[in-house]
Length: 311
Figure 1 (cartoon, rainbow, N blue to C red):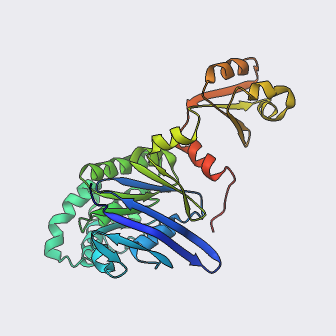
Figure 2: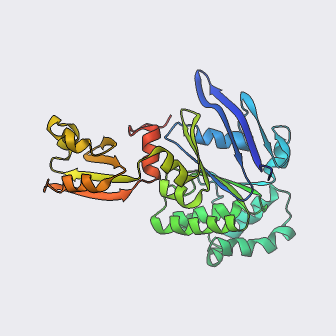
Figure 3: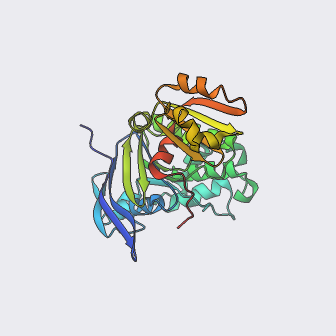
């Protein structure tokens, strides 16, 4: 059996009376992308900080690459690459200079770094912008430069905290392609994200956090099959909310295993969509969308549909 690359056991972190990470355990295997999803305040960023040694757990332990955190923090960090939520590029340096200077944090000399810069910029699709400063780049370019910078030390594990937040669809897809390429090269990734399509595309395994606790763990499709009915029928338009609530429509609701309302849309979860669709067809004012259950449905079932504010 392959030994885990990164192993976190029974982590607890409190700030005052609030427990933001609550008895959390997980491992990251070589070559896998482990995704961490959850609502605002679920403990995702604090978990990343614990893994980086930036925050010390109140209890529990972390081992990585055969080393112990925090005892061997520097040796562990030397094998990590990090892309944080916020842009931390140096605005006064060009793309190439950002990579060159960042290498110094890992003890890499200019002579060692110069041969690495061109391949890293090529990987980030920024070879033509080597002399541009971050202020001249688009949001997607900045995120790719941040990813290239995280690779200067050839890390075994990348920790990515919501790396595509704020990017347009084209920029997100390009960054996903680069992350897939890293996984194919054998890198491991710990990814936090609010984008369920991102998690389903990239992650071989998921942790679902809520209030600092792990509430589910597994492969995306297996979690969907475990927690959800296979088919979803979304209903909206005139009279949709009446279908969800009025006593006279109880027979229609009985055709679904579960009915939920979000805004003006009614979600029918069912293992047999055909009878439900036939019954809905009798309501001409309604619009329907029939689709398979997805990771967003799983997220909402496990953590709820109520909007939460940042803690």
